[in-house]
Image 1 (tube, rainbow, N blue to C red):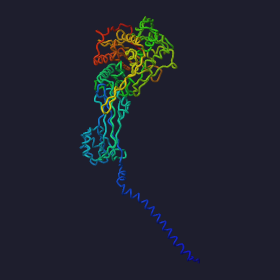
Image 2 (image 1 turned 90 degrees about the horizontal axis):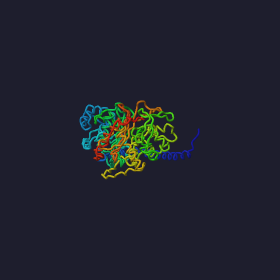
Image 3 (image 1 turned 120 degrees about the vertical axis):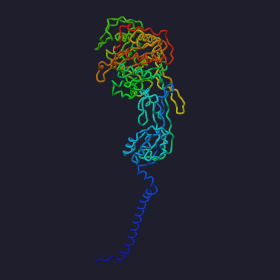
Image 4 (image 1 turned 180 degrees about the vertical axis):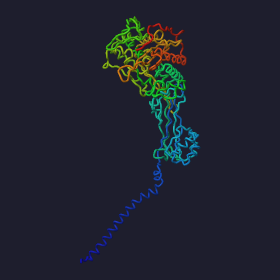
Length: 603
């Protein structure tokens, strides 16, 4: 039997005891360090963590800024925002849905039975209204009803209905611009949101009955004063809408411009919902307000964003180029056959005829395709392509409008022999109606191209008005050539294809155009589908207003002189009287309908 050394035994016990004591002390310290945070959580920060466990946090809440308004040139309201309150129900916190529904039904404009169902559903947060007036919102807040969140918001409205809507654009559910001028000027219109601190749920919504503290005040957005004249805009839209209904046209565009300043006074973009669907995305319930319920505003502004083959209105390109180059004069005569083959294509005039002896002016007034080709041939490919660019085609305008197109143009590398005919008569280059109007406006403005303009001034929240810069101008034609073209275009209205554009008491200059519609899937044209155009200006002896009208796929006729010229006439007649523009001739133009062998201008 082994015996333990007493000396050794006595030495071990004190050392073991000390070690155990050290371990115990360290363990106790660790446990204490672990318990302190827990105690802190349970006692010192009990309220904070309880709120988080209930989905509640102190949060910075965005206070919406008041969006700037949009006004016409005379101050008429086109779009305006007002401060409102948004009412949201947390139906998990509403114990008596029927009683609550009866209390707030009149405030949120929802019938009690329907509102009761909404509050019983237990789906979480439900928006009851986004547009409660400030006074009503504050009154409802004072009731302190369980489960209701009443927070500041804004509401966009249009006192003049849907007037100019395809130009103004829209705002989305979050209050930001989603199309048109609302998008283009978003940074100016939106203002700067403010900030407030309050108790919210984890989604950032203020909790029912909680209060907020403003940290940073919201700054209202700037407003726009447009060049648009509401009265003329209404007449333009109504006149175009009625013609779309009568002719069965697919869609229509009408733009009125101040010749000297480039200011757009009216811009209509409509779609006939009875024959068109889908791609143009019409705005509902607009046409009813003007007596044509089937006609609606388009989401995209077709006059600025959509290109089309312009047809005979494009003939000013070869005519202006030839006159400018001195290879023809208004009286130069041509032997014009009915048809001619160039390259692989056969071209002809609208109506069959023998060889005609026509002057340059008669070729234009009677819209002869073959006569135009004979003139263009004198200019040549390089001269034509240069003049296309010179007249503004292929270039974006100064508007910088969302979705604006610069056009689809023929180039030297894509040129074919048949383009020597097809391009001058408007069957090749795809351009926008606004570009066509700009080119004719340059003729009216003595050869000076003026950039179009839509915004006249910016209005600061304090009411300070800051005018926008005048439109830039540059000369594209000599004064002499512009005057010659003006006189030739007057003949189109007095003895040519555009007699329906005549306005009693005024000299009118313009051009008709009827063009085929290119197929999207093939390198051909859509059978039986045409665009009808009339573009011109008045008074021709002292031009002040220019206007273009384009109607796509009319059914009753296809000719620009029959379909679009009457719309031009009604709009221009109203505008001339609306602006008190003096009569320019004792008896106006002498019109001799049917004096030409051409009654159409089909290209």
